[in-house]
Amino acid sequence: MKTWIAFIVLFVGLSAQARTLLVSDVDDTIKLAHVKDLSEAARYAFDSQSRFAGMSELYHLIAQDQPDLEIVYLSRAPDWFMGRTHRKFLANGNYPDGEYINRTNYDSDVHKLYTLREVMAKVRPDKVIFVGDNGEQDPEIYKQISEEFAARNVEFHQFIRIVYPKASILLMTPQMMQEGQTGFVTPVEVALDLEKAGVLKASSVQTLIKAVLPKILEQPNYTAEGEVAFPYFVNCRDMVWKWDDAITRFDGVKSVKDRIVSRCKLRP
Image (cartoon, rainbow, N blue to C red; front, side, top):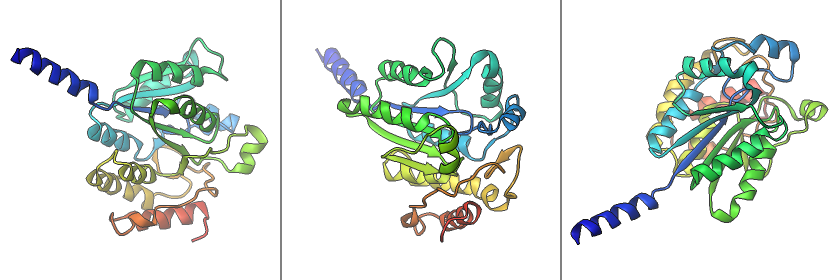
């Protein structure tokens, strides 16, 4: 009888554990790609080294603080074209283990949407962290998935890297940030929001800031290769800073803000 009671308690405990899903786009989200410029995109297509600073550290800290974490790296690029480069990139950048899914069966316009539906059905997460960029379809797709699964009481956190200005996007691919999404240009902003939501520990946020701050402060504005805080092609003038409440809580946040204001040409 005691054995059965212990089993039931264990089963209920495991069932009650929250499962967290992290879905990350690759090109222009964690990897330098410049997808809006064909010649520059070709330059970065087979570059398996150049990446946005601090994103690997951020993902490792999320995995540390969310031990039930499932990670999916999702790309709309076809496997034959970018699959090998992306896999090498994830290994070279020391990204935490996860499932890499690129385009194979679906049309490019629906690949991410259909794949995310499948992933959500498979993982059945309680919390979802979406990380993408404003260069292609990420804002619209992430918003649609969050709406489709709203009735299941899934907690969504959606982050969109500001890579291209609104005017530029409107001329090419109209992808605007959606309601409930947070724009970012460094991993610090993502970490601050996740700490506020109880996903990251305060100590993890401080660890990330300590690791990435030198790159944010010391790197030239228009760096093109390697681990880069502000790649030359990023135009982040539409960034909105909203983390002043964290300045007194975390060392270095004021310096991050000042650097973003300067680089993105924001109003102080």
